[in-house]
Picture (cartoon, rainbow, N blue to C red):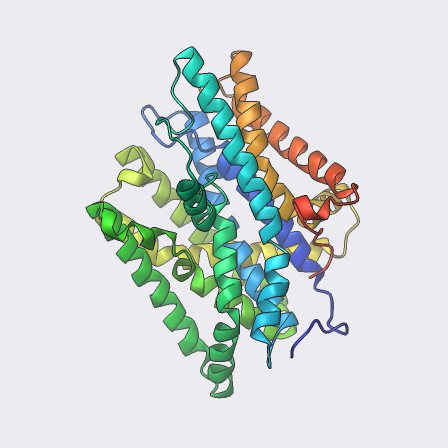
Length: 384
């Protein structure tokens, strides 16, 4: 049986990467009100750039998951004990917040119906045991909880994934495995795109199999953890070249996204060819961002500034912040609307982001101090 190796070196960079990622998640959700672009202006462009750039968050979190799991569990894994241990670290919190969001939606629907307003989803939905079970199994109790289901899927398949990785590693064929993971991810994304374009309700459940869309990042995380010092040494040696190349890739992709957004009015309505291009280049794009952030994270480990401490703290509480920030997204949006601050005004976005970020972090810190707080928001990620 494999268990946590107490002698493993603590990789401090991982905590910073979690910090960057959770801030990016919040940025995605607070800048996402420009899904439709009518008249491009400075406010539109700024929020689109923030939104497009911040989408590295989920790939980065999956990269981190592969990295950390392969540090702790490499071989001779007792599958049942492994799954039980991982489920205990995530499922109780997931269930608690799933019910919190379901209750919030029910209260909003009741309030909206009394005032003759549309519900949260625009369609009134009566909850039944069947619907609740479906939402719990698919992560659809709230818009962001699908990610927890994605992590659970990786936990369930990790013993198989690491076994396959080990076989390819023994044959010195990891690059082949990376290519297989990349094309698996691309083909699956194309299949899902085609499925959604055809709106095939009979195959709707396929949309909730999230894992194939992130296989490449998970395998990359495993590879990075197995060769951490060698890769960090290479990054340090060729830092300028890597950063310049990554910036060129990032600027090219971001400008392409912006062009598609502005020309078509929404990324959801892009031409099929542009969608295919984005599917193929996204892994390269997100990998470029990851390389830059890893370089920054290494630098932050040697500092003790307000900035480094802040990013580290957000990294420690990233899981709890992810779970709870949806509550503040809804509540603060309603509050700002009461005071006449709407997404049409420039001040809305920085104000909304600061309030959601600050309240999410503060609430998790407070909950963490309670005797049973970890059962609600999870353990802090102070270590790998």
